[in-house]
Image (cartoon, rainbow, N blue to C red):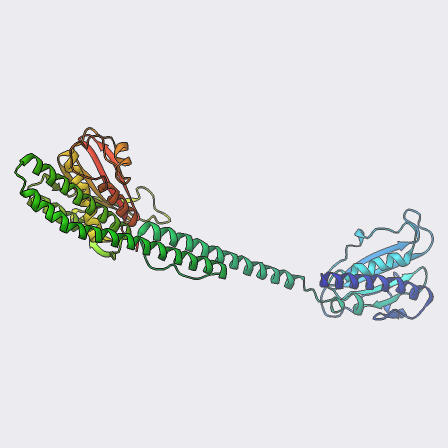
Amino acid sequence: MASQAAWQTHLNTAYTTGLQLYDTLLADSPPPSGVQVTPLSASEISVGGDPVPLPLTTGRAAHITSMSVFTEPAPHLVGSRLQLHIVSADMRYPVSGIASDRAGNLNAQLGNITKLLANYCSEPIVYARLDQRGWMRIDGNGVWGCGAAPRDNRLLALLLLVVGVGICLSQVSETASYFTGFANELKNRGRLGRHDPLREEGPQELRDIVRTVNDYLDIERDNLQQRALVLSGVSHDLGTPAARLRLRAALIEDEDLRTKLESDLDQMTGMIESVLTYTHAEISAEEPVQLSLTSLAEAVVADYEDVGKPVRFIQRDTQVIDKSRSVFGIGSAQLKMPTDDARRVLVSGRPISLQRALSNLIDNALKYGRTATVSVEANSSMASIIVEDECTTLSEDALNQLTGPFQRGENAGLIDGVGLGLTIVSTIARQHGGTLSFERYPQGLRAVLHFCRQWG
């Protein structure tokens, strides 16, 4: 705004100088400040009466802008006449854009011309003659030359504005990234079972929120641990009376009554142990390590095979992994991995939790599907443990509903269980950034434990 005001003042000064310059040409009054008016001698006037641009002796071609101004608009070529030759080494001036003064004021027209000269950066010499008076050489570069123009800070102001806006946008973007990072970290903490406190960074308001959330999560974790301790104490304390009840039940002569009592005791202790296992899975105190998922699955299956269970592990012939595309890449975005490499499927996870999840899936398959077939699949980012059985009565939708606590299927019948097996598996899957799902295949049902390979 200051540059705009200074520029407007510069143009107004040039216009006022033109008005005063007319009085100098008309009445030989002193020239305005910053302007030098010199009469031309006879040697400086050509045969035709027009001045010769003698001042331009630099060797550069001269550009001459000639014009005549009358007191009345054309075609009435009568009255006073002002002739001008503007000699410049840089340009011809667009005098055609100057509006004519219908009032016939030559001073106003001369003011518009000097204002036009001030609009451009040049060092023109003006030759002027009013009516039949002699030619005058006018040097007004102190008013309308390049050196007289005010310093234009508009580009600098625009640059500062762009820099300021850029700084503001970067600050906004950085603040937004802090909030996005906090949201992702909080989501991953709840989804992956992480226990480390959330980082306190970013603006003060966000740090206050993070501090409050950390305090809240610590309180909730303490409450969960207290509940686990209570359940552990109850489970331990019930062990002694349960043992006494078993000894006393053994003394009962009625075999049917003794069998029923022992069955009730087994169901009671099994329920307590299941609830305790579920609570421990929610706490997820186990630290993640790098492990071979294939080796873990083979070890679990081997334990079942040692006791004669119909469980087997099958190795896929090939594994499919994703490949990155180049700028010129076309076609398939997948590669086939050989069997030997497929056996080395490394993941970051909690081995005891994954072993418990796989055992629960196998137990569930043996209870309701008679057999269990285990396999492992993986790509560059995700890994899957697949357990297939021969269940033909339950649908995948019904099994998906059984992931809730204490939910059992319609075909449970007299099969032992409290309805927490699939709930524990689903909890472990979420803690590893994955899901538990079920799908039907021609021979039965397939349970898929899908989770991230690297999530810590």
